[in-house]
Image 1 (cartoon, rainbow, N blue to C red):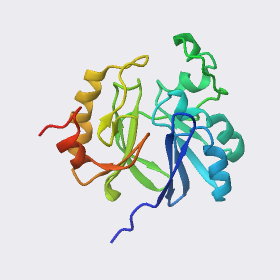
Image 2 (image 1 turned 60 degrees about the vertical axis):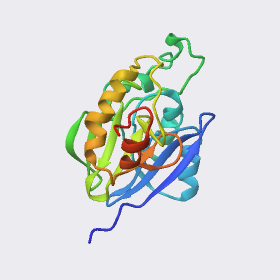
Image 3 (image 1 turned 120 degrees about the horizontal axis):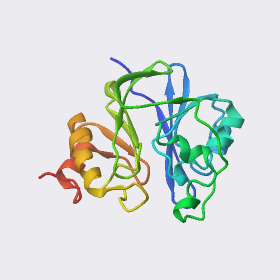
Image 4 (image 1 turned 180 degrees about the horizontal axis):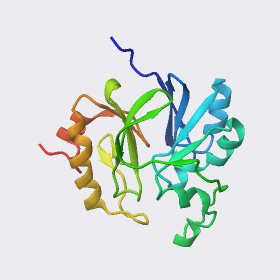
Length: 209
């Protein structure tokens, strides 16, 4: 029987943003980079090999440039996320007094049924509505979804930020996330893990029963 993917969680920054460190066959993969994530990974003594971003909202990318310097690891993100991490003024142009140290992604990720990251096969799902270019990373063998700010325990991502569309988000969750299976564990960008089945049955925003 295949062993389940081992992961660790860190919650950082003023928005209490989650990131996840997964141990793939080829090394550590970090999903998202909130404030404090670089120091957390460094203190764990992990030789980080890859940083993947679910989306480009500032609370998820504050440590991207720092991680790039510390670990010299490639950064992967959706094409629509790229300007959010490379343009220092991106969020200021929307009236947010927030700034990050800019950096450029090393490669781009779009929706695909299967992509190898360090020896683990992921399905990349594009689920817009909270943020343009929002990606969820699914490990079919492990029944594990790194969901970003799409689906939370008892809630869903906001739709009132630039590029957001709450009706689209609800539609995309029902179309792309729910069919993955009730047994799938969701690792969200904020709050505790949950199961797709629990959210399908009880989530007041997207529950179908």
